Length: 316
Image (tube, rainbow, N blue to C red; front, side):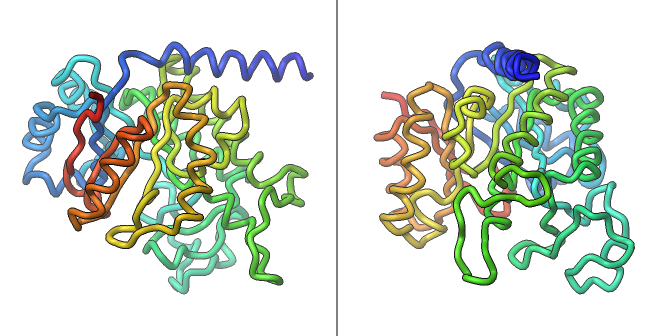
């Protein structure tokens, strides 16, 4: 059993090594690409002519799946460019095709009697997004169908995984109002962090079965990088709000805590993308100087992700 698990992890991580090509320096992260232009063809032209090495898109444009031909046109606009699909793995979104109205028919933000066992309460900070028990088999089966479509039908180059830090929701102890690192999940016998790692490994296995060169890029949840197998598995990470939350500087303690997980990963020479939403030049300059100092890449963009933002190579 242990030998077979080790072999599986080895094969998955080998896919990660094969996925590495030339090191990307610039990023586009546009989840509302409809805002770029009036037509899909015009948006494709804008993205194809952009200077970005990697481009992250929602799987759909104006309600319809991106066709592989459009993605290929975008990809062909720059040598070595990769186009990644955004996929929320720690929350259910009520605007996706898997959503059923009877899951929250009264729209009170709480699962109704007809909801599946994986569904939790609405995220109060993001309309239409519901927390999920991401280790639940039904949720995983639902998402893996999307992974198959993304990789096999649409032919994206990789997956940009969001709500990877969803484990922190379950690490909160309501009795003490404290967060407990590596809190035990009584439903699985693992920690909530280990359950997230296993979930991402399963996604990776399924995606790389279709395309062995699939890029796997988690957003946030940097604590998981402490796990060696996970750190080897992923091709890159995206990190939001590291030095400022919009135009508000983060505390020194928070920055130090997050960097304790990120600095060792930087040494692997895999890209660390700082996603910065500041509009004030002071905090944009702060993010730029820190990214250059730490050997990270940078994207300064709008939080609604409607634009290409600013992303330039910081290499000397």
